[in-house]
Length: 128
Image (cartoon, rainbow, N blue to C red; front, top):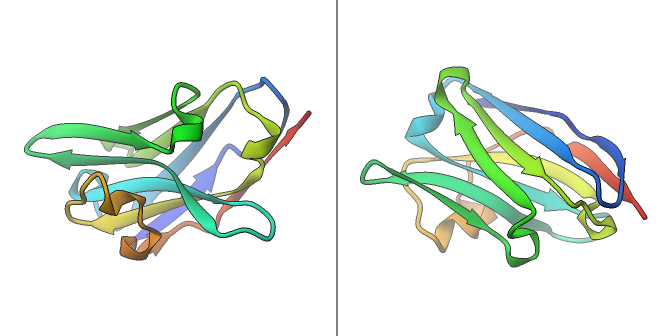
């Protein structure tokens, strides 16, 4: 599985960006997908995730991005999106797309250790 991110860049606080992650090698509906981010000098942390359980699509967010970020996918395009609105300087980081084969739970999808595949990362810079 290969993951390629796009859509990063620089924006002023309050602005918006939309990240995209194109997956190849496996269909995204057979995997749990997530976005993580890593600020300079800090650990990589969970941002948002999407999975399917019993035919239902579920989305998950870290508390600090709820109501501002939206994760969604397009199976036909093998793409996962992260729409980021009302961006804050604290959102500045390198953002990584990640994929885990099979099912995840509300807890496990937030754990970077379960993700086998990672994109190369893309920079998001928010200036205040």
